Image 1 (cartoon, rainbow, N blue to C red):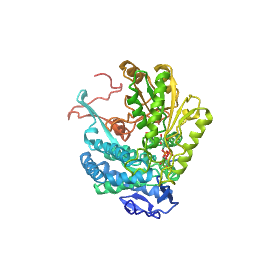
Image 2 (cartoon, rainbow, N blue to C red; image 1 turned 90 degrees about the vertical axis):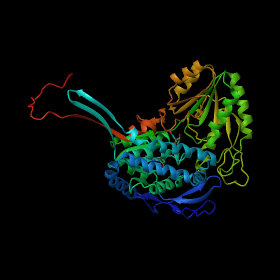
Image 3 (cartoon, helix red, strand yellow; image 1 turned 180 degrees about the vertical axis):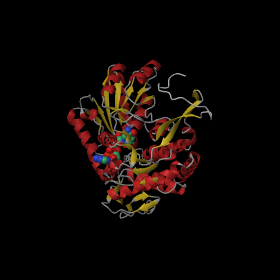
Image 4 (cartoon, rainbow, N blue to C red; image 1 turned 30 degrees about the horizontal axis):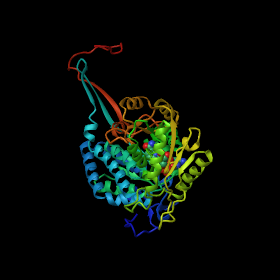
Amino acid sequence: MSATPAGELDPAEIVGHFINNAEVADDNRPLPVSNPATGRTVRHVAMASRRTVEEAITAAQAAFPAWRNTPAAKRARVMFRFKELLERHAEEICAALTEEHGKVFDDAMGEFGRGVEVVDYACGIPELLKGEYSRNVGPGIDSWSDFQPLGVVAGITPFNFPAMVPMWMYPIAIACGNTFVLKPSEKDPTAPLICARLLREAGLPDGVFNVVNGDKEAVDTLLHDDRVQAVSFVGSTPVAEYIYSTGTANGKRVQALGGAKNHAVVMPDADVGNAVSALMGAAFGSCGERCMAISVAVCVGDEVGDEVVAKLSEQIGDLRVGDGMDTSSQMGPLVTKDHFDKVRAYVDLGVEEGANLVCDGRALVVEGREEGFFLGPCLFDGVTTDMRIYKEEIFGPVLCVVRAESEEQAVQMIDGHEYGNGTCIFTRDGEAARYFADNVDVGMVGINVPLPVPVAYHSFGGWKRSLFGDLFAYGPDGVRFYTRRKTITQRWPSGGVREKAQFSFPGRQ
Ligand code: NAD
């Protein structure tokens, strides 16, 4: 792929693959990649054949023995250089994110920054891999646990965070001594490829990090190849469940993060003005295409409900929707025409189901960008838990308001939902906040924090059908996921002393 500067587009350009530190062309079934703000094809992406994916796995397998034996401090030095290069290339990467995903440039910089934080964390790998040691567990016997890399591991990632979500995976996996094959989203493939080039520039040896673009054929090859030891997946719940069941049936370690429907509870004592500002950003930032987006506001009591709806309607009227490269835009388009059609159909459905569409973004036209996939922010009031717009993940700029009579009822509602990714509560009451955090069946909880995305040195994951597998992504769980514990017990008997066979199980000594 050539580094065509923004503004000089070549739709015939094909984003290929990155194997053994080299860009590999594969003109097998190229798919168009569009700029969602203009609706125009900006380039194509090659869909890898099974053979190409196997080539990437072979490269990763060949690189593993030397990389696993490279001292952790030396692996960390590659991460330090990678981080520097990422920061130097931030604008180029974020422009690619905006061009292919549609999110506004500042939001792309935010995503990118959170990804780089995981690289920071991976720079500390010698400390993180230190293991555990016990001296004299028996007479003259010492024991220790070592955390060893798994081998070739794969990552399969979604369209909505094309730079950050892959960075949840490969910096830690590689720093732990594994080799990696990434299968990014086919909708916005450029950022991961730029990162691959930067890892090469940072000194990463051939074959340690590979990228294959593709679809189900590529994913199935990764899931069925015995050389792949583990798979990290982030995407929608039906695919996450498929990846988990197929990967584990094939003997792999799998973590598969799925979809979400995140509720924000607004208590009667909340600072409603601030809660509404927080809801605006969390519901409509990135056009609602975030797995941590707030898509349901649960208002406790009608008084607060009416106030929240009135204030939201006012602020929605002022929200500036436009091309993500326009610095005045606060919200960009949806990622593809298909996704636009799907989200719009959900708004039609909400009306049919009897919810009250207080703000209707369906008629929005952005001047000069008439072919873009823009949908204005939509607000539904009077939503009930039996409606499909409440039950299903819409993944667009659609906020549903439901009413509850008490905090307990709000918690029961959240617990009854199939997803359990993130949630938050707006309140000034410490007791209510503590009850919420203690009791709600959700993996990530915010208290007056609308998007409680854990920092890189904690771990990210949901509960219920938002995560299949035992370990969260990145942070300490990431290190555990990409390593296997080995426990070694050692003694050095004195020379010349004849030892008797012991037939009883070694007990307390
Ligand atoms: P998706 O499930 O359609 O695709 C994710 C990845 O799986 C892509 O690489 C895609 O090529 C591949 N894929 C798609 N269909 C497949 C199939 N049938 N078999 C094998 N592989 C397949 O998800 P998306 O639309 O790219 O992303 C949006 C979804 O991701 C939303 O549901 C969102 O909630 C979720 N998401 C979750 C998290 C989280 O941390 N829980 C984070 C980001 C996004």
